[in-house]
Length: 211
Image (cartoon, rainbow, N blue to C red; front, top):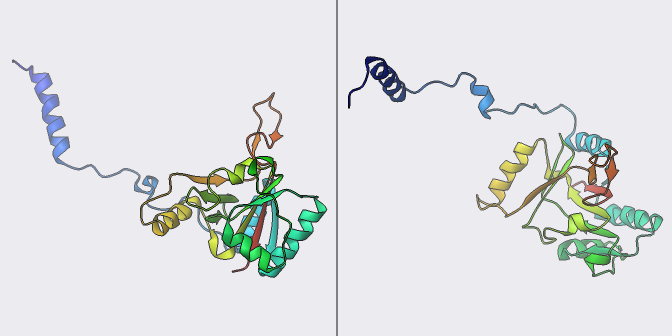
């Protein structure tokens, strides 16, 4: 097959280009460094500010005893009498500290669900959960009110940090689902009017325990 001089010239340029690697014009745009730099303030404070600005409700607790006391007070004031908690370790901690409000064993008809989480992302005010948790995929999104119990040791600055933690924790064998929940469920698709609780919990609480 005869190749025209013009086409042969083009092919030569392509061959030459393929044999020489081309440096990236903007190497910093390829994820080699974070776009967002950590602020100087405490991660717990930054998470609380961001989370509450997204209509989340935040409670800081110095220990498990204060956690149980604060949770009992809020449950009583909101008249929550159908509280669901699937995680045995969390149930034991709360019971040891005299929290006895949850007696409801049916997720489908509960008014409040309590879970733990994987991490808290300070920059976005997000709760990170996964399918590997004992609570499973549905508990945090099914009930009208979701209460997340977290610890200061679970705070990370950015989403990238949470994903790195996940790779380390699960040795590369990531859970089938990792969820980033940022405040209560909400949408403005209906006549551009904000509706809260449309696809998930209407209220989200984070109880952050200093540990």
